[in-house]
Amino acid sequence: MENEKNLGGSGDVIAGRNPVIEALKSDAQLDVIYIDGNGGSLNVIRRLAKEKGVVVKDAQDKKLTQLSGGASHQGVVAVGACGEYVSVEDILAVSQKKGTKPFIIICDEIEDPHNLGAIIRTAETSGADGVIIPKRRSASLNATVFKTSAGAASYVPVARVSNLAACIDQLKENGVWIYGTDASGSEYTQTDLTGSMALVIGSEGFGISKLIQKKCDFMIKLPMLGRINSLNASVAAGIFMYEVLRQRGTH
Image 1 (cartoon, helix red, strand yellow):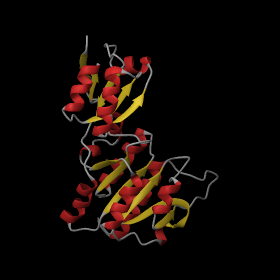
Image 2 (tube, one colour; image 1 turned 135 degrees about the horizontal axis):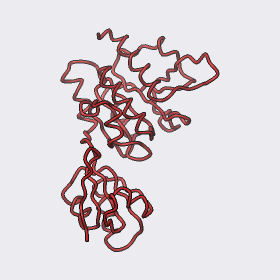
Image 3 (cartoon, helix red, strand yellow; image 1 turned 60 degrees about the vertical axis):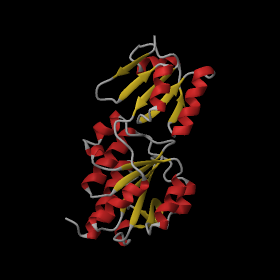
């Protein structure tokens, strides 16, 4: 029998083909749909998800059983987002309302939800206007992100975009300069960070993707004096964000 199961504190978990189809038709705030197989109504779900811009991931039966708490899932489980995403325009509007210059955080393929949650937490405390993440190859607003953010995910606007490069072009059209973070850049304390800006944080191990690097107007770096040549992504992001706060003289 098809069913819907709600797991408290982890967003709505919807199991079963018809319940997932109805959730898609009702424009429910879905984070990810996990599917095992193809054909029939599963293909309908894939089509509807594509139309609605909902991420679909292939998963095995064991994963679906775990997500659904053992309930009958019929090869599909949808997980609801723990928070609502906003548009890039919404984030740009934050600084307009405050009368300040834009200060935006872009996360390029930050797949660890603990890192994303920590970045959102620091973005809130440092006064950033919002955070932008890609739909693919990124953690999303799930329960782990909310918990790690210590509640900050309830206050910081987060936009989830299908094309990060196009999003950056949109920011540039609105007068926002793009600052990438990479070891090849200039010293972060020697770079003027007081203007309208978006700070790009890359993933651990891989950094910023080549395409996004090409979109950056400036590259900045942290000094590395030890044998380890990189920092945890959220730690590095925090240092950069508070340098922006220091330079802007907002206390």
